[in-house]
Length: 283
Image (cartoon, rainbow, N blue to C red; front, side, top):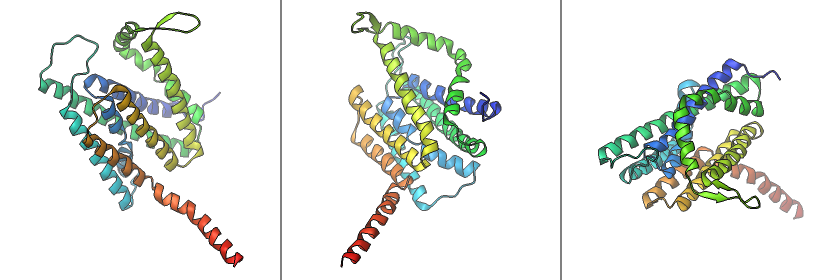
């Protein structure tokens, strides 16, 4: 079937998708713990706002800038605290004990990768918005091409992928029920990750065509928040009071940004008016 959006447009979209994906994944090789990774990515609203101002020349209400300030403060707090507790997360190569400055350097590089991924993802979102306005909304087509076209680029990462395959193969064996075959448990985790990622990403692509951007942003933000809490509990990562303050700032700032409170008030207002009219008629 002929694609509704031009191949050239998809190529640009795919290039941004590839850069953002590689940067986000490579950040784990530079001493970035999972909670910090997820908190940092919660700053996507900030990046989108900045890109909107620079590229689309948008102007925002004071509440938007306030929320961006809260989210920024939350990310800075979590970044600084995690920086104090940073430790090497290198697992591929057996390296000698690194000195604190070397570890801190790699951590700073990881932060730079996350920052690049954040703004590339924001630019990608704006580009998608422009394409949807120009060609109409086609979520399944966009989902297909943005994941199919980048595959050849991953040949550039063959060595890294092969190293991780060896790590997966060396993981603890898990015996599959019924068939009684032992499978490295990392492959089970990978399968689970692929399936849940597909459900999540395909739902978001459809959501963008069925709901307002407010609803999509809120749903994705809540998902990130739940993922963060699950990660802390499951991986037993250190989570101080400062991390909680940072997370609350990020979450509250996002709620203010998406104007959820105003939307709830507007939704409740008609029902209150209807109830008042009903009371008057009864009297």
